[in-house]
Length: 103
Image 1 (tube, one colour):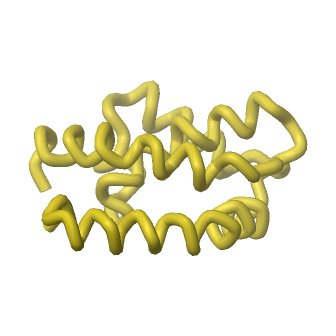
Image 2 (image 1 turned 90 degrees about the vertical axis):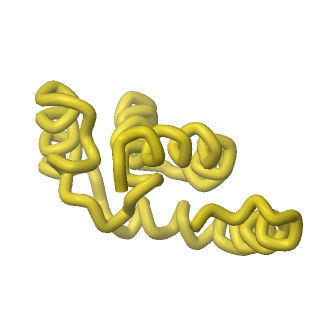
């Protein structure tokens, strides 16, 4: 996926990502905000490596530090994702029905 397409998807899905992260609780508000920034990098291309998803060296290092933090638990990230999944599924369905589904 080229960088222009990745950036367009990143912008278009920002609202859905915010809803997905609304319930995240990593025990520190700064980590919650960092989660949003790090996960936004992967939102457009979830299968990308950290290096490919990041926009530069600083963002890559920040992502590695985030995932290396002992307070960052995969369970907390998944709980937030699962809580938002029904809403996200409806949004994807509605985009598909309106012809706005990304391919």
